[in-house]
Image 1 (cartoon, helix red, strand yellow):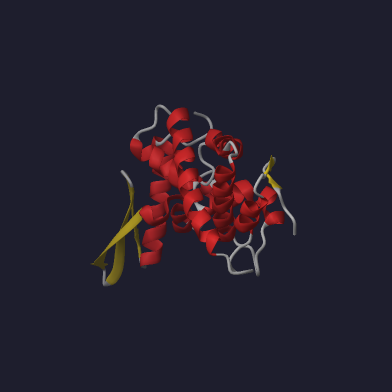
Image 2 (tube, rainbow, N blue to C red; image 1 turned 45 degrees about the vertical axis):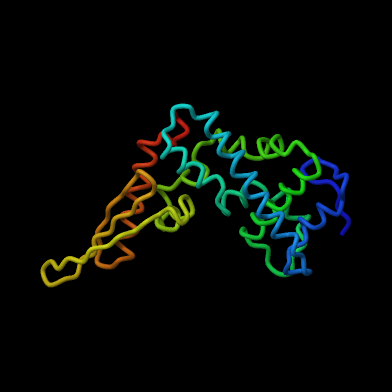
Length: 215
C-alpha cells in the first residue's frame, strides 16, 4: 500500500514513512527498530514537557505517575489506534503494543523528514493531558485493580509480601509502591492481598494527586 501522508503531514521522503509503517513481522526491516528507538525518546520528552508546563502544582512523584499512564502502550493505543490502524502493515493481530511501537517509529520518521513533530504529539495528547486521569477514570467499578495499577505504573510498581498465621489460617500482607505513593492490603492469598493493596493505592492517587476531573 502506497502511503505518503499521515497525521496530516505529507512526507518529502516517502521511504521513511513506509519503513515506519512496515512492522518487521511482515517484512525484514531493521530500520523499524532504529526509528522506534528514536521516536520513543522524542515522545517521552514532549509528553513530559506537556505535563511539566500544564500541571505546575504537581510534585515530581505526581508528574511521574501521570507520565507513566500517558506513555503506556494502553494509553498510546487509546490515543492513536483509530487514525493509525488503517496504515499499519503487520502480519497478524495488531495489538496495542504493535500500535505503540509503530507510533514511535512514525514519530521518528516525522522528525527526520522535518515535520513539526511537537505539534503532532501535542494535538494527539493534549485532550488526554487535560483529562488528567485517562486510565484511572472509572476505576471504582473496575474489579482487577492490580492490572489497572500495572497499566498505570508499569515496571515502576513494586510489590512486597509478608505471611502471617491467624487462627490457623495463612494471611498475606501486601504492600505496593509507585514512586512516592504506597498502598497496603491483606488477604487469604497473595492475589487477594495485591488486589486490596492496588485498590488502596489507586484510591490514594485519586484523593491526593488531584486526578479527578472536578479539580
